[in-house]
Length: 129
Image (tube, rainbow, N blue to C red):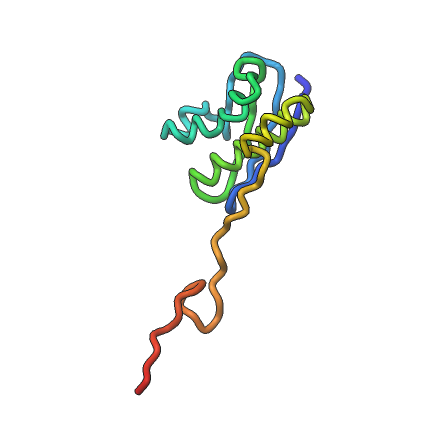
């Protein structure tokens, strides 16, 4: 079956590739069902948000490959990729997805550790004597 839309989503260090095909609303992530992969309800809801915003909940089958980062970052990457793929299918979806903030890449990442310091910002303890 042909892919209708393809989207790449990113959040922190997670990357999600989203493929949308005609179907009846099944979401598969890394070979598992949505509720099996994201066992916390809030993450499963987070992934479905672009579908709810565009009223496409039971129109497409969605296949997602996601890697890197933690569970929350992966859920955010899936949401971002799904929103991009829905825009590719129909440009009419763009306005509602943009208004809800699903097309914006959340650019917050862990700051790198600097040399001569204990962490990204934490300094070694200063000794006067």
